[in-house]
Length: 212
Image (cartoon, rainbow, N blue to C red):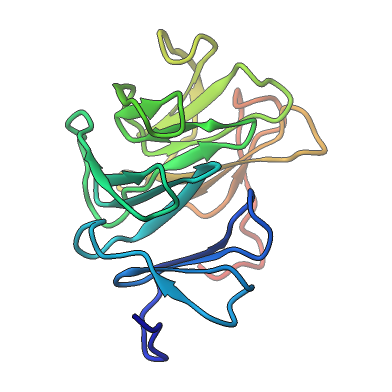
């Protein structure tokens, strides 16, 4: 199959393990081994309307769509559905995230894989998850108006602080400043951008000059 010029791309990524290999998540999944000059179909077995592509280990490919995950261990030549625990929210905002400190660890709202998507386990539900570059064992999550942190892979969570969000606002991304320990930036749906200088105990808005 050829990659059509009118194809709608959900995700495009260079393979971190193979030079010049480029993946295009459309319908079906395509791969290029020459930096995008030519393309080969890797089939449509990944399910209807995949929205997210992940390449967590050599030869391993994950595609996800609203809580439904398919996995290939042979660079997309064959696929099998990954049956994961029931998740709270399988909306269009549902996404998986790799821990950049350990790319084989993958998180989604209500689930976690410690081994690049081979096995999945129930985990804490959240609105946003972050990865502190200065504390590799810590996993902070935002849920509602509260910032929690786990120091034991999710076995337990402790309250760090409260964001002070409006009634209908949520945190949808947690960012960490790689140059400043304890600097945390939540991106919210209705309260703009916040910042903490003390690891989440107190917060201040950073919205001056931004659109209302």
